[in-house]
Length: 248
Image 1 (cartoon, one colour):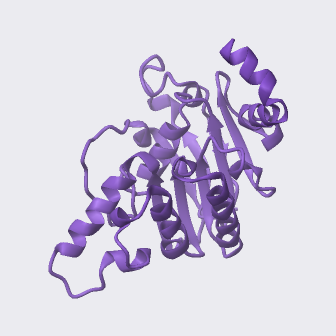
Image 2 (cartoon, rainbow, N blue to C red; image 1 turned 45 degrees about the vertical axis):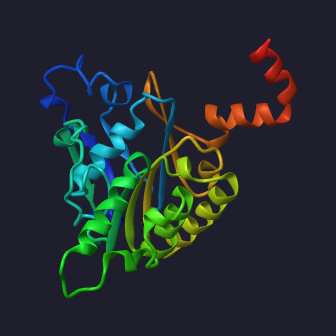
């Protein structure tokens, strides 16, 4: 049966991999990958730095036609070609519905996206300025957090496919809660999200699938079972004990 969600499954074509001992195939998240089902609304990848969650998300984005540095599908700029070739080894199962819009956000290269928007708007053209889709105010004239919230509230719409890599990097805890509420609203309007994150706030959404990236690969867990959630909870419950052990 053909799925109605935009992206339903990621499959690693393992027979095409010549050597699982080289990057990125040596990463546990890739080395153990066979098939991975995605939630029709909200899927999270969580794990330590270097676990491969961002590499997998990036490969999915490139497989779907997004620019490796971020943006919508009509962004074709490149400032530094650092992405892996993993996308060439993925088979992505799509549903019969096509997203009306889409976006790949990389927190580390969103500055480059903002610069590309200004470059495109500086070129002669008859259409509306690109920045109008982000609220009309230069993203460089806002803080990192403000520019991301402008993206989330002004640019993102229902019936869209959105891949977000560590969006919490720009956000205070209060803004993370606001972002979670906006993501929930968009998901209710037919949007689908795949998010790599360290945020225990974001993964607390009750209607989501969470995959923890570890030495055994990807494992489906509840938010309360993730190291991010447990460490944050335990620290806030007894900060003095944690600080004494850490700093003594």
